[in-house]
Amino acid sequence: MRKKKVAFTGVFDLANYGDHLFPEVFDREMKKRGIECEITLFSIYRCKQAFNKEKEVYSIYDLEEMHRKCNFDAVIVGGGDIIHYESFKHVMEGEYRSYPIYDLWIVPSIFSYKNEVKLIWNALGIPFDFSGAKAILTKILVEQADYIAVRNKQSAQALFHSGVSEKRVFVVPDTALVLDDSYKANTEFSVNINSGNEKYVVVHLSKLMPVEEEQDVINKLDALYNKGFQIVLLPLAYTNDDDHYLVEFS
Image (cartoon, rainbow, N blue to C red; front, side):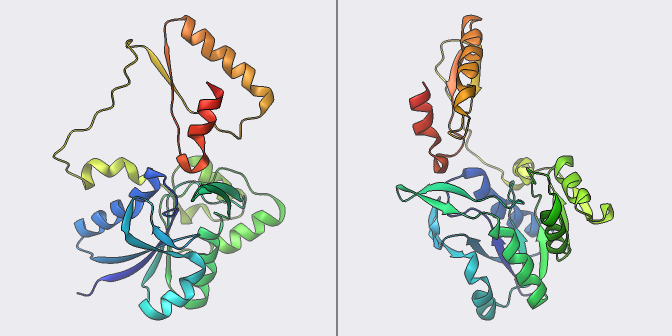
């Protein structure tokens, strides 16, 4: 049986560890079902994969051209909260670049319609509700998918409010939750916080936090500290420059 040729879209050009697990988990889950896949990664920018410099990542805008070479059987759309119309900036090669993350699902929808290639949503998240023209556009784009899986009820409701049939949407756990089934590691990993205290609070803060809310956050952290908690500031994604923001905040 020949391998299934799969185009897999996600933020593989950014150093966000969780997103890089999606194609790995998918590949192992397919193998468990007797399906061998040849996976080609697509992100906004063409590059070497952020955590694996041996792996090529192609630009999503080259999906059509790559299909002519590879003849894809299916397109798997990521994981993560990428179903929206917002554009962000991320730190890439030491500078902020515009990152239209929405193209990671919009381009595959158009591509699948034109080329009659199977389109599969891999436990996607929808962080914002849609209204007006965006709701109409969302329904049109989503209708191209052959299988629609979202990661929580909020995401499902956003689709229902856009007119997508409830019968077509499946709410499933984030695929990171099957890591124990997919990976049988022989090495144990641990994190030593070195707080000197068993009571601690791990805090993630974003540079997008409104300035007027900073003092309120400081007050709450001070209150926790006075109750005996150690405060651990943890960057969620270095691509968002979180580490620099936390240094300034502290």
